[in-house]
Image (cartoon, rainbow, N blue to C red; front, side, top):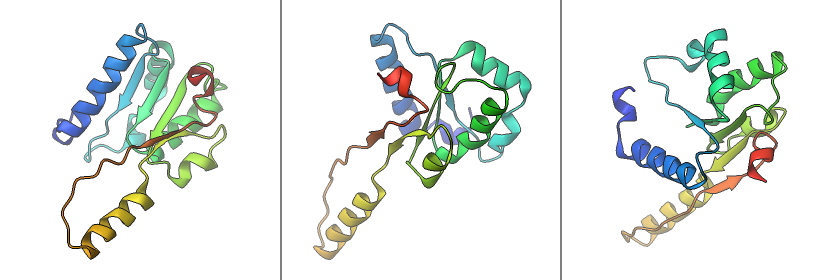
Length: 147
């Protein structure tokens, strides 16, 4: 792991996911893509790594939707069933999530709501902590494991 992935945000997120997976009897096995700023994500994707993912994991989670585009296309080119053989889940619910086929499930960060709340707090000159829960947007790339 690169230093930027040793932050509490990444560690707490992964710890929470791993805890939820343990509670679900260890299924699904998820690979977390943590790409360093110094290593381009697409450089990681070669035939050996694709085989490793498909043979060892039920799902892949990336911290940005766009990180899954090349993997998605490589899996489709190899006729590997998404989500039957391996599911894909992104983060941010960007436009990338909707243009792929099968479409990518993603965790929406509710950007418009966050911006609106930040502007309201600035206009009201108040400091507050508000919890805004992200939202899971389920699409075809995870549908069989989600049901």
